[in-house]
Every structure is written in structure tokens, then in C-alpha cells.
Length: 144
Length: 144
Image 1: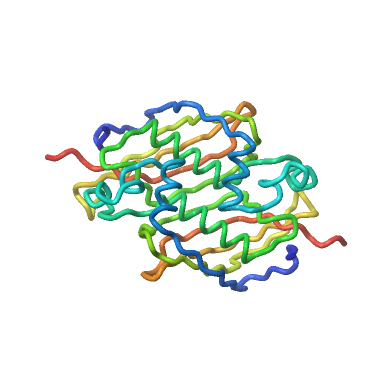
Image 2: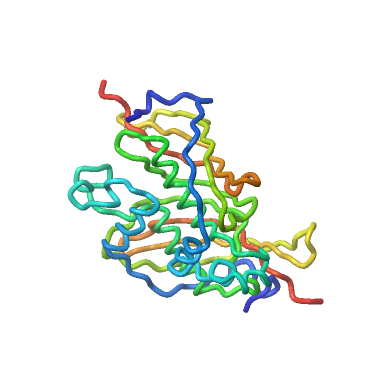
């Protein structure tokens, strides 16, 4: 398990792969984002996207799944805040992978047992990036 | 259904309510964020959070559910990008509600049939804000 001291700017990590199918897209949408272009192929064809696509929040949640599997941090992968963009939607049948890069590391001034690690995470399918994210993670320091 | 022209800076909207229980928190975590503090009460007691809490992505996804129900936009609620912060975690048994405010409206230069509406969304439970978000939404203009 990684501590704050194990991270350095410029480090990169590659995740495993995860494939999303139409049933997964519809199941997530029914619970969290019940809009026609996430629920129904025929309605999606007439929509902004032109085809059934995953909710951006589904893409973000699948990204978290891969991130947790790829970057084991002592105490857990805990984010304080993120910036997200979805340059294009994730379609059914696509397989996603993450490219992760450490952008910044900073000891916490107020909490000497913690550090902050800023990572950039690009989620790509076969056609290119479907999500870009910058996340501030909390990482414990090794005991002195 | 709202079009771009129906939004103005300073408008506010209040959502309905949604209660999250421990089973929902565990179910989401098993799929998307399988970490002890989202999966198991006993393990959570020993963790960074001290109690079972929802994944931040679960809070974000529940927020989307309430947003879609509260703000019907012609063509759908479609976001190009967001900034998110989780000032404190969402615990089992809590009920959340959104306060939504229009922060900016802007016609698209490259796509004359679209406008951009920036909203600020605060997701609060009984103890205060659990998520703050700024989101850039795409809204169609009324036909000329």
C-alpha cells in the first residue's frame, strides 16, 4: 500500500480494462440518470447523442473502479475534490482503460500526518478519451 | 421543457429529497468503489471516516438523479464538464436535497442553436453540504 512518500511528480500508472454493455448503461441510468439517451436505443437515435451512451456519472464511477484497483493507497483512495470533463460520450460495447499521472505532491500544513497527491486521469475507449479528470487525493505519511 | 432563453443569472431551483440507506451505499460501492469504508460498518469504524459513508461518486450520481427531476431541459440535462468538492461524506440514513443557482448563461459561438448554462449545485443533508458542484450544461435555443 502506498503512502504519500511513495508518490513523485511525473509517475505514471496504467489500469486494467473494463467493458461496458448496454444493460449496464441502462441499469445505471434507471437509478441515477433516467434520460432517454441513456435508457433506450430507439429514443437515443433521435437525441443529442444519436446513439445509446453511458451517463457521464457512469463513466466517472467506472473510472473510480479502475482507479481503486490500480492505485492502492494506505487508508484508501479518498478524494477531496475533482475537475471532470467528458470530451465525448462512452457508447455501449466499448472498453475503457485509464492513464494516470502524478501532477503534484504537497504535505498538508494543517494535518502533519497527511499529504495531498494531485493526479490526472484520462479514461479512454477505442476511439480516444471519454473523460479527463484532475483529482486531489489524500495520502497518509509514513510514521516518523 | 426549458430552453436556453428560459435561464437567467440568479435563478434558483430547489429539488425534492432522496434518502440513502446502508444497503444502497454498499450496493453502489460493490460495483464502483469497493473500499472498506463504503462496504462494511465494522471496517468503516476503523477507517479515515470512522463510519459507513457513501462513495463521493454515489453522492454525485444521486445528485444527478435529483437534478434531472428538478431541471427539465429540452433535449436533456447534458453536461460538458464539472467541478466537484465533497466537504464531508454522506452517511447512511441521511436525506439529501439540492439548492441550484444559475451562475452564468452564454450563447455558443460555434454552435448557434446551443447555449451554455453554468449552474452551482449544493447537495446538503441534515448536517449541511456534502457536495458542491459547478456544472456547464448544454441547452438548446428556441427555434428562431
